[in-house]
Image 1 (cartoon, rainbow, N blue to C red):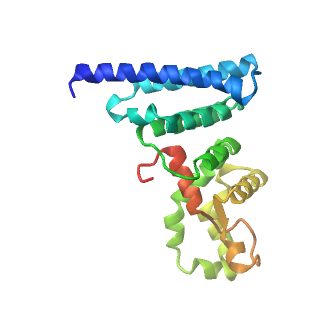
Image 2: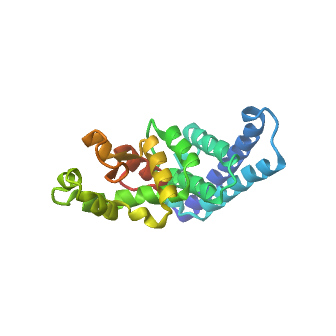
Image 3: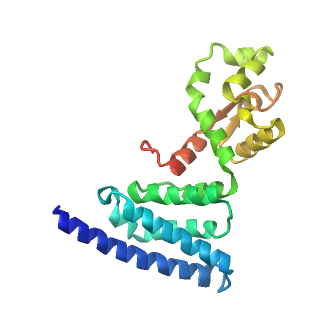
Length: 226
């Protein structure tokens, strides 16, 4: 495509996107919370939308899926994200949601769990995401341990397994166990000690990321193998 044509196509796409997302912000005011929105929440919605548009403008236009970005499907995703953004004061979560949308702009994510993943991203914090990433990264190393299941049964594997798979990751033990329990309750982690041995071993020792947890990380990180 001619560079001049590409430029005008991008400008046209951005104009349509800005107009559409502006209407979405107004829709949040009138439809989602029945006309009442505090000044702070309105500023949060407008700031998020403006920041997202600036990131799109600075992105490589050849990597943007403009057809999807101007589609009703993307607008639904943006609407779902914005509803959550206006209800959080956590900058880390706001950045996380913006990254999710930017991933969508270049590589649309197809899944029946998209709303579930957005809800989880709203309800857990960045520390829990780092814990989840840890279990994903060490999965292969821990799976290669010789007779690891038998060593846990014999009472020898608890300390070694904890060192390999968690070692508390620098967290206070009570906070770490709370984070892990919350991730298990959301089906992102699996406590194999309880699942395999009927609860006869100490809980939270032989933890493993679930396939659902891996898909969640691919969704929020925009992994190319999604």
